[in-house]
Image (cartoon, rainbow, N blue to C red; front, side):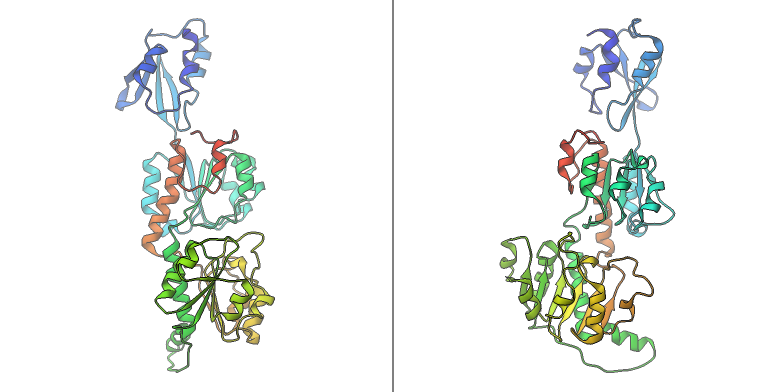
Length: 413
């Protein structure tokens, strides 16, 4: 190979360790610099005089893989690890992100913590994306406009802390070559636990008992039995099935509804029925469907009126599955007996929202995934997706795996 082509050839390597045989075949050898830095040294001490000195230095400075750079010192080339800049907007990171933070820094990432954790609107998000390679995020507003902004020109991956990604324009991300990662499976048991806690507390009015005791009063009132009743599960995916497993211990009859056919629900004793039948027969209805344009507002006035007046509604899934205005009327007028909600169309829930003043309602601030041990595992998994892509590996769980074969892909595998 001509000596003046050597520098260009080196820039094409995509592995951190280059086989010695490959190096020697193009006229280079491996060497060590100060601190053990890997050097590539021309066998002939100097590059070809046919290449102007300035051009030689310029070509040697080009990156040879997504996280490695070549730097010239005399006639040697140094491979130095390039750092990715990672913005963390996930509010959970403050409390359970310690191990994940260390993993990112150990991998060579520069971690940026914003003045305020998410969810962030596009106006808040855009200034933070300048020069950022990756985001470990809350349900921030990653619209097509945000992702295609010049401020997000370096963005290679959006790694979601959690399983919901409806705040991300996945089609736009794929078109722009940006990977979108999430953590399916890790929240199944944690969210199912919380869902059943809401169901039990709502049925037995635990929250009301505490409120009376906290005021210094002692008041007795009747709740509702759970055992032997009928539970309707809307959305029989991983979390819905985890709820069904818990329900079996309470001797509950199980009805299910899902737009995606599957044999798994029947294995757990779930009878799959039409939505109207589920609503009419269930004593408890719990929402676990994915949020899509088709499922937005799935439960509105028409559906609430089909429920029993003694039935309870639980939503620890996606807030926008439910028409909140219709639910307020249902609670005020007694269409249903009560509701327990952990997710809302707009979060945080506005302080003057009518749901805060509705009767027979139990509200919590999106706490279903807030189990400390599992939070650490989710944080690590979201961080690992970033580290994997930075190192040229395919992240474990991508929403848009097709982006990896796209010519627009901003990272290098």
